[in-house]
Length: 235
Image (tube, rainbow, N blue to C red; front, side, top):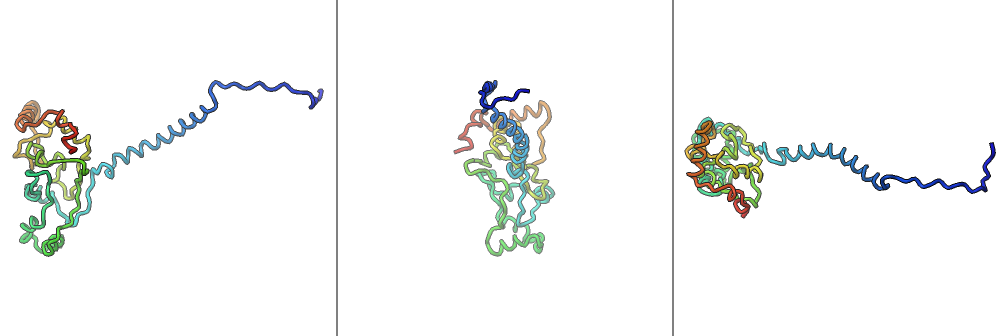
């Protein structure tokens, strides 16, 4: 075999031509890594987005007194308005003052260990440090009386409190959740004498539909366009 003379010039290799430019390799890499990462990230994002820590559904802080709504509102049948004064007269549902508790407990279980924080509050004049559960953002205006006096029961927002030993947030109280009700309020209406009867159910079928229409007309609830206006809740 003849040896190649190193001094002899060689023919240059022609340039290889690619269908796509070289930078598309990086795009493909980003797409592959992003797709794999997104497949892992999406479930985590959804899990956090719908968790109780984000929506507050299920939020049930430890209270200074083990007050059972199931016993007081459920078994004893105490009306919500006895403790939450003003809920049908103004925008806010007040936290019951110690005086309200002592109206009963000055003679009912006056020595109970569980009621010691209440007795301490009664003696000192300082309120019991109840932990708030349902808390809307400051930029949201919500009027309890406007709802309660127009056929919207406590149960629509607070759930079956009369069955809760420990009160927990039952609904997300999000903007979308509020708008669902504002679009079709007739589905949540009931007679005023059933507002605090959390177990009430509307009649089935056409009778229920007729009652819903009647209540919407009776309470003079405006149309969906007004109910969805920004200024209704954001003032």
